[in-house]
Length: 198
Image (tube, rainbow, N blue to C red; front, side):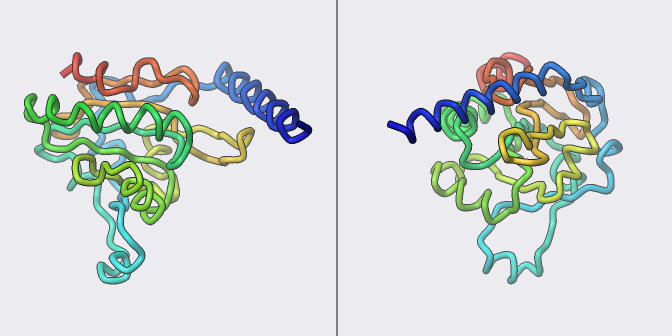
């Protein structure tokens, strides 16, 4: 009984803090027309992998250029692996729509979060989505910072994280962008919305 009351009180405080933070947030400087290859030219991401794969690859990274240049990419960012909306709604919306993306000749569907690549790998395995979605870790948040898509979620004990967002990118240029009003929202960043924008 006491633990249930404490849990509810904690969730209420976190939700209130997140909503207050969301009302103060500034909108991302990335916009339709932004060239990610220029905006994040010095940034690399880390493809989801096991620790052993990391050692074998000498802890390699993947440049933004390799991810976007000459390709049609749908990319979505989220606050973190293993979190509620991310696991229960965001990733599943893309997983179940993968054939629709293929029909639109999308080269890659990518999920990125401010997590290390090992957490992203275990999470992708748990969601059984690794075969259809490419998962990348932005371990230091540099990708999100370069696009001003970062978010301080210290109120939820998460620290620096990502906004919840999605984008359609062609040869590095943003053709469609959707950023949620708050990290707990799931209104505009799902697969159904971006499919209509391609």
